[in-house]
Image 1 (cartoon, rainbow, N blue to C red):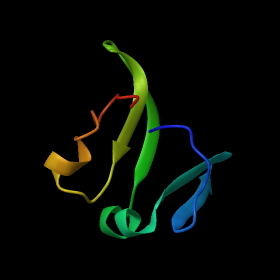
Image 2 (tube, rainbow, N blue to C red):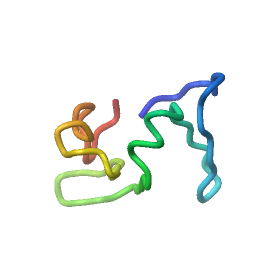
Image 3 (cartoon, helix red, strand yellow):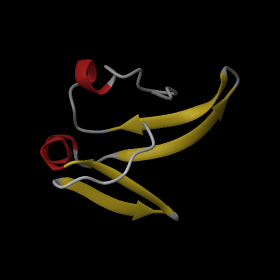
Image 4 (tube, rainbow, N blue to C red):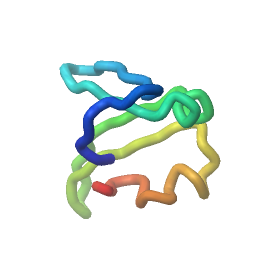
Length: 67
């Protein structure tokens, strides 16, 4: 995840007052996508899940990453 401005070809959607964006081809492969903020004994962070195979969905850290 990163802060950015939408570009041509990005898919944008809002959930719980937060606007998300993703490149449309990636969105089509990954949907549905679930973004959640979790707190565990190991710390807090974002949990992102999608239909991407495990090796692709964790390429940017997955789980509680902040890439």
